[in-house]
Length: 233
Image (tube, rainbow, N blue to C red):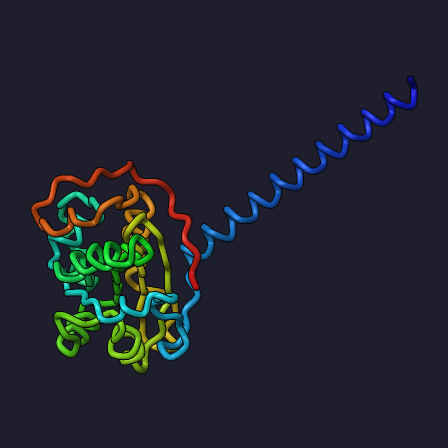
């Protein structure tokens, strides 16, 4: 009997130790996640990870278009207050075109459900309004997804970037913070933080055909904002 009691005590002690270890690991993950979003790791534009496609190569031919400032705020469910309106002065956003949204659904149907219905949104947050306006003049208004890495990301020679990726249902968000090569800190850190927090707080997009109605859509529900938990890659 005494032996059984001792074994039970040992098992309980081991379980408690395991629980403590799990709690410590979770705490470390939270700390690393918050530190990476507040102090993102910048890499030269030639080295930073680009948009990924996996085995769905047909998606490379689908196009994305430059969004208006109003579309950016509506997509991220950010109130149209003066501070938020300033985001558009340093942020360039590319959304799926109407063709892309319809093509995803057609591809999914033709492949009997094997083809992906997931599309991509790409946001670039620049360190200044001057940098954004200069880059916008050289970038096309519409571009195939397969050209994003070469013609947008790799074209920013003399710059370095921090990459954040969020999966939100049928939309995957890629957020790039862009600054001059060798710059210290990120001048528009407040804008970057606001966008990351807004993306994290979004509900999953179950059906992105609602985006066909942008900027007047009313069908996507959003959660209240939560602390950002993104990792820079």
